Length: 212
Image (cartoon, rainbow, N blue to C red):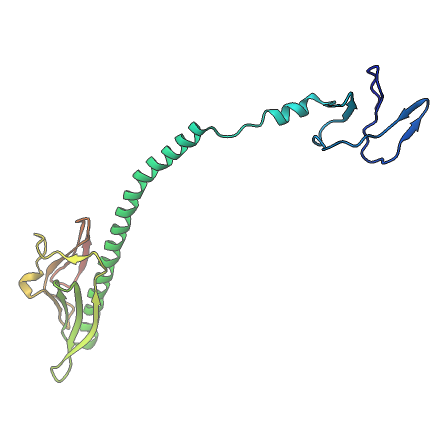
């Protein structure tokens, strides 16, 4: 490309390293100190560099970053969201732990009932509130106590013997299942650190229900 400004005419083709002659014009390549981008053609005249495409200058000049105020606002929003979400997540975690423990105790009570019917013997589920644990036992043919299973509650959970719905204290904290599947009725209450409770009720027929 040629440009006439009443001065030296220069040809900026970086792919040539030697002067090029065309017609009556002597075209000369001059080394540029640094490429100014890949958009548009470059002209060299009077010691200055200009873009043939003005949009190239705009694309480089319009680039903006984040201001300090914008960064502070975003951090504030994230902090508020964290303050709201974290307590809810903690409560949800405690609730999940309570439900998991209740389901496990219920499963062990059902196991005790099934074992009593199968073995044609009485099976007891003895609760130890002071230690936060319980165990399944039965009597063998010789009348000796046989331990079937012993389990502890997860950390942060306890047997709420002081809850008004807890009724196994009148039976020495024990649920007994006979060989016919019937049981000594009562209600067991579990409580977590947030004072949320869930109860397990065993009726006379040996049916087990969970109430949150």
